[in-house]
Amino acid sequence: MQPLLETLDLHVSFATDQSPVPVVRGIDLKVGRGEIIGLVGESGSGKSVTCMAAMGLLDDNARLRGEIRWNGRKLHCQDDDAMSVLRGNELAMIFQDPMSALNPVQTIGKQLYEAIRLHSAKRIGRSELKQRATGLLSDVGVPAPEQRLKAYPHQLSGGLNQRVVIAMMLAGNPRLLIADEPTTALDVTVQAQIIDLLRSLRDQRGMSIILVTHDLGVVAETCDRVLVMYCGRVVESGPVAAVFQSPRHPYTRGLLASLPRIDSSDDALTPIPGVVPQPHEFGEGCTFAPRCPVASECCYSGSPAQQCSESDHLFSCFSPLPVQKTRAHR
Image 1 (tube, helix red, strand yellow):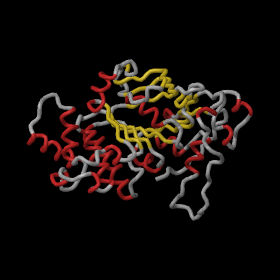
Image 2: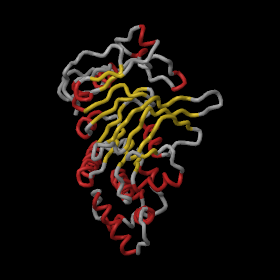
Image 3: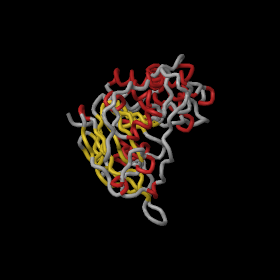
Image 4: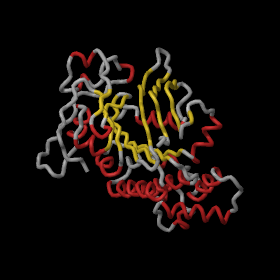
């Protein structure tokens, strides 16, 4: 079946006074209908830039190469007006901090009304606007939705504000929702509620979701497939169970090993040594080589080709780790 969203050899760089700075380097991404895809990796790996490129929200100094396709149609060739029609009606995105997405001097109702009008093909009366807004808040689990319409963002908790943002994104009934770290500023209990909400929206609406997160436990419980990104490249991808139970790339195994576990009495964590290089420091070889425990000479001189294991499990490494069944993190 044709993917809903697809990127083919996507490269994104940003122009500077010296030379272009590469941030995304050859991303192949496919999102099927009703599928939840997880993008994981350390900060600076290119996850958010990949999503912003798909939404057509990159800055003017961004340089894009490759293809972005929406339902088979090229997105990167669309002008701003065409992308504005797609955004909200077909594609929607929620960001890390819900307070930055809401206007602090306008009520929740007014902001929801504006989102509904923007995505409606006909003029809507005030009573219908209120009814739709109340329904959207109810759909995302906001208690006493009619009362919340009169509230301002500062009068709601972070979790409720995030639900309001999701309701605004649902106003256009999008087919794909990109959630960029949607639970970062929330406590653990509220994080679980937001993730459960996203999962239920997928089940009820058949909506596809790209979930950008650092939380591998959330990915293990929520996503169908996962892409592990490092320095603008996908180093490993595949079904969540295959990747987390049998990681083949040293970076993926390092991420899993650095997490605390509730089924172990060992308090010591195993961090990945070193730091993520800056984009202008990317070389021709494998960028993970300086931090990799199994790196060899060839890792510093060339980029490894993609290999395929069972169940569409892909990885790019000159010295892939042997299959070692591990329990998925939750």
